[in-house]
Every structure is written in structure tokens, then in C-alpha cells.
Image 1 (cartoon, rainbow, N blue to C red):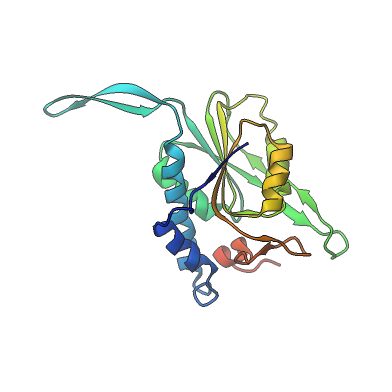
Image 2: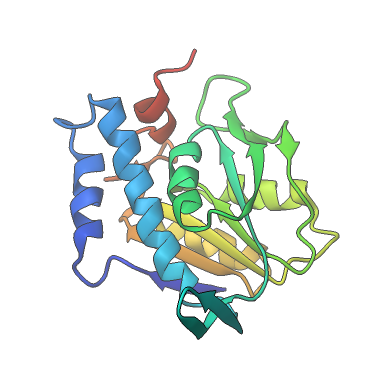
Length: 217
């Protein structure tokens, strides 16, 4: 798996990452969603540099311009519901992309720390020969992303698979390395220290879905 850490060099990305973590700012859910969306835009731009391009000629009012455009179609696929704001940021740049959505959540049978990932909903186009960008803000254990890839089956193989996350842990990255195809790309905005005993990211930011859309039952 090819890993891209995009906050190692200081940029406005780190400003937005600081704000989504700040407990004094998190009470403003609209601002949280907007900052996640901005992070998605930055990640989309960085990821776009690695795609394949083809040469084209564009007719302008005064002549012909020789330039390039993305060679293969892009499919954006986000994990509900936390991935929606990040998905919107990617859509701002890949505005012609097809879109897919998959649900995944931790199901705690006995209200303890043990859980199973349940994937219950899927709506996605064909991935054949396309660039699949799988979007989820938090890479904690990595089990949700792997479960979603299994749900998608990918009988029609995409040209490339890109996984885009805002915050990741070393444990989650290791799990992906052991369970996803070696030619996958992982895009990480920020690498955090660890998982705690409850499998939550430390220092993290809390529950991204709750912060963006309200506390769930």
C-alpha cells in the first residue's frame, strides 16, 4: 500500500485540522462541516496530481489550446454518515465524478468494547477501469474500510483504489496494509498517536459524524 501524508509540510490544511479538533470550536457544527469540506478539497487537489492524464485540444474564442485532462473517470464513494462532508469537498474538485455511498457502523452486542462492523446499505456505480476514491474521515481500527471494500466486492476492478482519511492511527494503517490490495493508495491528512482501550483515536477529535450532524441515539 502506498501511503501519502499530506500535512507534513505546513499549509492551510494544518489550520483547518487544528480547528476541527478544538473543543472551543466544535460546538459550531456548520463550521465543523465546512472545515471537513475544505480538508476534502485540499486532499482532492493533492490526490489529483497522481492520476493519469491525456492530451486534448480545447477550442478557445481565439484559437486552439493544447492541454491535458484526467484520462479515466473518477468514482467517489463515502461511508455514511460521517463521510458526507468530506465527500462534498472531493466533489468540489472532481465535479464530473460518479458517486457511491455505503453504510458502516460498529455494533456492540453487549454494550462493551467488543464490536462487529455492520455494512447494511450500498448504492454505487460500476468501478470498471475507473479511479475509485473511498472516503472516510477517521481511520481508527481500519475494520470499517476493509468491510466496505469487501461489501463492494469489486468484481469490476477499478484502475486504482485511493482511500482518503482525515485522521489515522498507526494501528489502522497496519490493519489496512494487511488486508487491502498492495496497489492501493492511502491518503492521510493527519497521523495521530494511537487507539485507546475503547478503540477511539487519541488525541483525535471525537465522533466526526456526531460533530457534523448531531448526536445519534
